[in-house]
Length: 153
Length: 153
Image (cartoon, rainbow over all chains, first blue to last red; front, side):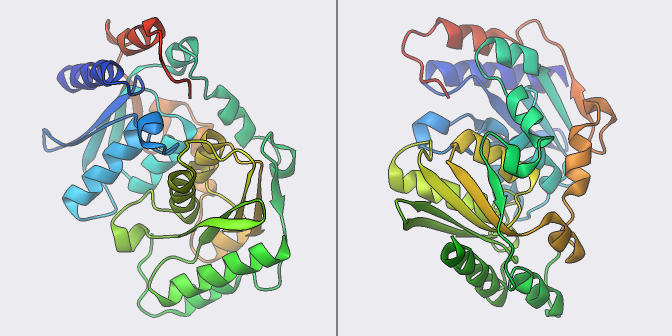
Protein backbone atom coordinates (compact mmCIF):
# COMPACT_ATOMS: atom_id res chain seq x y z
CA UNK A 1 0.00 0.00 0.00
CA UNK A 2 2.80 2.43 0.95
CA UNK A 3 4.50 1.98 -2.41
CA UNK A 4 1.39 2.92 -4.41
CA UNK A 5 0.68 5.87 -2.15
CA UNK A 6 4.27 7.04 -2.62
CA UNK A 7 3.85 6.71 -6.40
CA UNK A 8 0.64 8.77 -6.26
CA UNK A 9 2.31 11.50 -4.19
CA UNK A 10 5.33 11.54 -6.52
CA UNK A 11 3.06 11.81 -9.58
CA UNK A 12 1.08 14.66 -7.99
CA UNK A 13 4.35 16.49 -7.27
CA UNK A 14 5.56 15.92 -10.83
CA UNK A 15 2.23 17.23 -12.15
CA UNK A 16 2.75 20.55 -10.34
CA UNK A 17 6.16 20.86 -12.04
CA UNK A 18 4.39 20.28 -15.38
CA UNK A 19 1.87 23.06 -14.61
CA UNK A 20 -0.94 20.73 -13.53
CA UNK A 21 -2.80 20.72 -10.23
CA UNK A 22 -1.31 19.07 -7.10
CA UNK A 23 -3.29 15.83 -7.35
CA UNK A 24 -2.75 12.32 -8.75
CA UNK A 25 -4.44 8.93 -8.55
CA UNK A 26 -3.61 5.36 -9.59
CA UNK A 27 -5.91 2.42 -10.29
CA UNK A 28 -4.36 -0.88 -9.19
CA UNK A 29 -5.61 -4.35 -10.09
CA UNK A 30 -3.90 -7.58 -8.99
CA UNK A 31 -0.93 -5.57 -7.76
CA UNK A 32 -0.40 -3.79 -11.08
CA UNK A 33 -1.00 -0.10 -11.91
CA UNK A 34 -3.46 -0.23 -14.82
CA UNK A 35 -4.13 3.53 -15.02
CA UNK A 36 -2.73 6.79 -13.68
CA UNK A 37 -4.39 10.18 -13.65
CA UNK A 38 -3.37 13.71 -12.74
CA UNK A 39 -5.38 16.89 -12.37
CA UNK A 40 -5.77 18.38 -15.87
CA UNK A 41 -8.47 21.00 -15.13
CA UNK A 42 -6.64 24.14 -16.23
CA UNK A 43 -4.47 22.53 -18.91
CA UNK A 44 -7.42 20.72 -20.51
CA UNK A 45 -10.13 23.33 -19.90
CA UNK A 46 -12.09 20.56 -18.22
CA UNK A 47 -13.47 21.14 -14.71
CA UNK A 48 -14.21 17.40 -14.42
CA UNK A 49 -10.58 16.39 -15.07
CA UNK A 50 -9.67 15.69 -11.45
CA UNK A 51 -7.02 13.03 -10.96
CA UNK A 52 -9.49 10.33 -9.85
CA UNK A 53 -11.86 10.97 -12.78
CA UNK A 54 -8.98 10.86 -15.28
CA UNK A 55 -7.66 7.61 -13.73
CA UNK A 56 -11.13 5.97 -13.55
CA UNK A 57 -11.88 6.79 -17.20
CA UNK A 58 -8.50 5.44 -18.31
CA UNK A 59 -8.81 2.26 -16.21
CA UNK A 60 -12.27 1.57 -17.66
CA UNK A 61 -10.88 2.07 -21.15
CA UNK A 62 -8.08 -0.42 -20.38
CA UNK A 63 -10.51 -2.97 -18.92
CA UNK A 64 -13.24 -2.42 -21.54
CA UNK A 65 -15.78 -2.15 -18.74
CA UNK A 66 -17.66 0.60 -16.91
CA UNK A 67 -17.00 -1.04 -13.55
CA UNK A 68 -13.70 -1.27 -11.66
CA UNK A 69 -14.51 -4.55 -9.92
CA UNK A 70 -11.61 -5.78 -7.79
CA UNK A 71 -9.59 -2.60 -8.30
CA UNK A 72 -8.09 -0.29 -5.68
CA UNK A 73 -7.70 3.45 -6.16
CA UNK A 74 -4.69 5.16 -4.61
CA UNK A 75 -5.15 8.92 -4.45
CA UNK A 76 -2.68 11.57 -3.32
CA UNK A 77 -5.59 13.33 -1.58
CA UNK A 78 -9.04 12.55 -0.17
CA UNK A 79 -11.66 12.65 -2.97
CA UNK A 80 -13.92 15.67 -3.50
CA UNK A 81 -17.71 15.08 -3.77
CA UNK A 82 -17.54 14.77 -7.57
CA UNK A 83 -14.83 12.14 -7.39
CA UNK A 84 -16.57 10.37 -4.51
CA UNK A 85 -19.67 10.08 -6.69
CA UNK A 86 -17.60 8.76 -9.60
CA UNK A 87 -16.01 6.20 -7.28
CA UNK A 88 -19.44 4.87 -6.28
CA UNK A 89 -20.53 4.58 -9.91
CA UNK A 90 -17.25 2.81 -10.83
CA UNK A 91 -17.37 0.53 -7.77
CA UNK A 92 -13.73 -0.26 -7.00
CA UNK A 93 -13.03 -2.45 -3.94
CA UNK A 94 -11.54 0.40 -1.91
CA UNK A 95 -9.83 3.78 -1.97
CA UNK A 96 -6.61 4.70 -0.15
CA UNK A 97 -5.66 8.36 0.17
CA UNK A 98 -2.71 10.28 1.67
CA UNK A 99 -3.49 13.99 2.18
CA UNK A 100 -6.77 14.98 3.80
CA UNK A 101 -9.44 17.56 3.00
CA UNK A 102 -7.74 19.81 5.57
CA UNK A 103 -4.39 19.59 3.78
CA UNK A 104 -6.12 20.49 0.49
CA UNK A 105 -8.05 23.36 2.09
CA UNK A 106 -4.83 24.80 3.52
CA UNK A 107 -3.53 25.01 -0.09
CA UNK A 108 -6.69 26.78 -1.27
CA UNK A 109 -8.60 23.73 -2.55
CA UNK A 110 -11.60 23.80 -0.27
CA UNK A 111 -14.30 21.29 -1.18
CA UNK A 112 -15.94 21.51 2.25
CA UNK A 113 -18.19 24.16 0.71
CA UNK A 114 -19.49 21.63 -1.84
CA UNK A 115 -20.02 19.00 0.87
CA UNK A 116 -22.10 21.54 2.78
CA UNK A 117 -24.10 22.50 -0.32
CA UNK A 118 -25.18 18.86 -0.82
CA UNK A 119 -27.17 19.12 2.41
CA UNK A 120 -28.83 22.39 1.31
CA UNK A 121 -32.25 22.28 -0.43
CA UNK A 122 -31.68 22.51 -4.23
CA UNK A 123 -33.38 25.88 -4.81
CA UNK A 124 -31.48 27.45 -1.87
CA UNK A 125 -28.01 26.42 -3.04
CA UNK A 126 -25.29 28.92 -4.05
CA UNK A 127 -25.88 27.59 -7.57
CA UNK A 128 -29.70 27.44 -7.60
CA UNK A 129 -31.10 24.10 -8.79
CA UNK A 130 -34.65 24.65 -9.90
CA UNK A 131 -37.23 21.91 -10.29
CA UNK A 132 -39.26 22.56 -13.47
CA UNK A 133 -42.00 19.90 -13.47
CA UNK A 134 -43.08 18.76 -16.93
CA UNK A 135 -45.75 16.28 -18.03
CA UNK A 136 -43.13 14.38 -20.08
CA UNK A 137 -40.46 14.41 -17.34
CA UNK A 138 -40.70 10.66 -16.66
CA UNK A 139 -40.99 9.69 -20.33
CA UNK A 140 -37.30 8.74 -20.81
CA UNK A 141 -37.59 6.48 -17.76
CA UNK A 142 -40.80 4.88 -19.05
CA UNK A 143 -39.20 4.09 -22.40
CA UNK A 144 -36.15 2.74 -20.56
CA UNK A 145 -38.23 0.53 -18.27
CA UNK A 146 -40.12 -0.85 -21.28
CA UNK A 147 -36.94 -1.87 -23.11
CA UNK A 148 -36.29 -5.63 -22.95
CA UNK A 149 -32.52 -5.44 -23.58
CA UNK A 150 -31.41 -2.54 -21.42
CA UNK A 151 -28.08 -2.56 -19.63
CA UNK A 152 -28.50 -1.70 -15.96
CA UNK A 153 -26.01 0.78 -14.53
CA UNK B 1 -37.07 27.71 -19.77
CA UNK B 2 -39.82 25.27 -20.84
CA UNK B 3 -38.41 24.97 -24.34
CA UNK B 4 -34.93 23.93 -23.14
CA UNK B 5 -36.40 21.50 -20.62
CA UNK B 6 -38.50 19.99 -23.40
CA UNK B 7 -35.39 19.67 -25.57
CA UNK B 8 -33.54 17.93 -22.74
CA UNK B 9 -36.41 15.48 -22.17
CA UNK B 10 -36.68 14.79 -25.92
CA UNK B 11 -32.91 14.17 -26.15
CA UNK B 12 -33.02 11.80 -23.15
CA UNK B 13 -35.86 9.87 -24.79
CA UNK B 14 -33.96 9.71 -28.09
CA UNK B 15 -30.87 8.47 -26.23
CA UNK B 16 -32.84 5.49 -24.87
CA UNK B 17 -33.85 4.62 -28.44
CA UNK B 18 -30.14 4.73 -29.37
CA UNK B 19 -29.26 2.35 -26.51
CA UNK B 20 -28.03 5.03 -24.14
CA UNK B 21 -29.26 5.77 -20.64
CA UNK B 22 -32.44 7.84 -20.03
CA UNK B 23 -30.68 11.12 -19.27
CA UNK B 24 -29.71 14.28 -21.19
CA UNK B 25 -28.46 17.77 -20.40
CA UNK B 26 -27.96 21.02 -22.31
CA UNK B 27 -25.68 23.96 -21.56
CA UNK B 28 -27.26 27.27 -22.61
CA UNK B 29 -25.47 30.62 -22.85
CA UNK B 30 -27.19 33.84 -23.98
CA UNK B 31 -30.23 31.85 -25.04
CA UNK B 32 -28.25 29.48 -27.28
CA UNK B 33 -27.53 25.77 -26.71
CA UNK B 34 -23.72 25.57 -26.77
CA UNK B 35 -23.44 21.91 -25.74
CA UNK B 36 -25.61 18.83 -25.35
CA UNK B 37 -24.81 15.63 -23.49
CA UNK B 38 -26.44 12.26 -23.06
CA UNK B 39 -25.64 9.36 -20.76
CA UNK B 40 -22.88 7.31 -22.44
CA UNK B 41 -21.87 5.09 -19.49
CA UNK B 42 -22.52 1.67 -21.02
CA UNK B 43 -21.82 2.62 -24.65
CA UNK B 44 -18.55 4.35 -23.79
CA UNK B 45 -17.41 2.10 -20.93
CA UNK B 46 -17.13 5.27 -18.87
CA UNK B 47 -18.87 5.43 -15.48
CA UNK B 48 -18.31 9.20 -15.41
CA UNK B 49 -20.15 9.78 -18.71
CA UNK B 50 -23.38 11.04 -17.18
CA UNK B 51 -25.31 13.54 -19.31
CA UNK B 52 -24.29 16.56 -17.22
CA UNK B 53 -20.59 15.61 -17.23
CA UNK B 54 -20.61 15.06 -21.01
CA UNK B 55 -22.37 18.40 -21.56
CA UNK B 56 -20.09 20.32 -19.16
CA UNK B 57 -16.93 18.94 -20.79
CA UNK B 58 -18.24 19.80 -24.26
CA UNK B 59 -19.35 23.30 -23.23
CA UNK B 60 -15.93 24.01 -21.71
CA UNK B 61 -14.28 22.80 -24.91
CA UNK B 62 -16.50 25.15 -26.93
CA UNK B 63 -15.78 28.11 -24.63
CA UNK B 64 -12.07 27.34 -24.18
CA UNK B 65 -12.49 27.76 -20.45
CA UNK B 66 -12.83 25.54 -17.39
CA UNK B 67 -15.64 27.67 -16.00
CA UNK B 68 -19.22 27.98 -17.29
CA UNK B 69 -19.70 31.56 -16.14
CA UNK B 70 -23.12 32.92 -17.14
CA UNK B 71 -24.33 29.54 -18.43
CA UNK B 72 -27.47 27.61 -17.44
CA UNK B 73 -27.65 23.82 -17.39
CA UNK B 74 -30.96 22.18 -18.35
CA UNK B 75 -31.06 18.55 -17.22
CA UNK B 76 -33.75 15.96 -17.88
CA UNK B 77 -33.25 14.76 -14.27
CA UNK B 78 -31.98 16.05 -10.94
CA UNK B 79 -28.16 15.68 -10.77
CA UNK B 80 -26.50 12.81 -8.90
CA UNK B 81 -23.75 13.64 -6.35
CA UNK B 82 -21.00 13.25 -8.98
CA UNK B 83 -22.73 15.67 -11.34
CA UNK B 84 -23.58 18.04 -8.51
CA UNK B 85 -19.88 18.17 -7.64
CA UNK B 86 -18.98 18.79 -11.30
CA UNK B 87 -21.54 21.60 -11.44
CA UNK B 88 -19.92 23.33 -8.46
CA UNK B 89 -16.46 23.08 -10.05
CA UNK B 90 -17.81 24.39 -13.40
CA UNK B 91 -19.82 27.18 -11.73
CA UNK B 92 -22.75 27.80 -14.10
CA UNK B 93 -25.30 30.43 -13.04
CA UNK B 94 -28.03 27.87 -12.33
CA UNK B 95 -29.39 24.41 -13.05
CA UNK B 96 -32.95 23.57 -14.12
CA UNK B 97 -34.13 19.94 -13.97
CA UNK B 98 -37.34 18.10 -14.86
CA UNK B 99 -37.51 14.62 -13.32
CA UNK B 100 -36.63 14.20 -9.65
CA UNK B 101 -34.47 11.74 -7.72
CA UNK B 102 -37.67 9.85 -6.94
CA UNK B 103 -38.55 9.47 -10.63
CA UNK B 104 -35.03 8.15 -11.30
CA UNK B 105 -35.16 5.77 -8.33
CA UNK B 106 -38.47 4.35 -9.56
CA UNK B 107 -36.67 3.42 -12.81
CA UNK B 108 -33.82 1.72 -10.91
CA UNK B 109 -31.36 4.64 -10.82
CA UNK B 110 -31.09 5.22 -7.12
CA UNK B 111 -28.43 7.72 -6.14
CA UNK B 112 -29.91 8.25 -2.67
CA UNK B 113 -27.47 5.56 -1.52
CA UNK B 114 -24.51 7.70 -2.63
CA UNK B 115 -25.97 10.81 -0.98
CA UNK B 116 -26.23 8.82 2.28
CA UNK B 117 -22.67 7.48 1.92
CA UNK B 118 -21.30 11.03 1.77
CA UNK B 119 -22.39 11.52 5.38
CA UNK B 120 -20.74 8.26 6.49
CA UNK B 121 -17.18 8.34 7.91
CA UNK B 122 -14.74 7.39 5.08
CA UNK B 123 -13.45 4.11 6.55
CA UNK B 124 -17.02 2.93 7.31
CA UNK B 125 -18.35 3.47 3.79
CA UNK B 126 -19.60 0.63 1.56
CA UNK B 127 -16.49 1.34 -0.51
CA UNK B 128 -13.94 1.80 2.31
CA UNK B 129 -11.85 4.97 1.99
CA UNK B 130 -8.71 4.51 4.02
CA UNK B 131 -6.50 7.34 5.19
CA UNK B 132 -2.85 6.31 4.78
CA UNK B 133 -0.81 9.13 6.35
CA UNK B 134 2.57 9.73 4.73
CA UNK B 135 5.35 12.18 5.59
CA UNK B 136 5.31 13.50 1.99
CA UNK B 137 1.48 13.73 1.75
CA UNK B 138 1.43 17.54 1.71
CA UNK B 139 4.45 17.88 -0.60
CA UNK B 140 2.42 18.42 -3.83
CA UNK B 141 0.51 21.21 -2.06
CA UNK B 142 3.74 22.80 -0.77
CA UNK B 143 5.22 22.87 -4.26
CA UNK B 144 1.94 24.27 -5.59
CA UNK B 145 1.80 27.00 -2.94
CA UNK B 146 5.39 28.00 -3.71
CA UNK B 147 4.71 28.43 -7.45
CA UNK B 148 4.46 32.09 -8.48
CA UNK B 149 2.40 31.49 -11.66
CA UNK B 150 -0.16 28.92 -10.58
CA UNK B 151 -3.72 28.98 -11.92
CA UNK B 152 -6.25 28.84 -9.11
CA UNK B 153 -9.15 26.47 -9.59
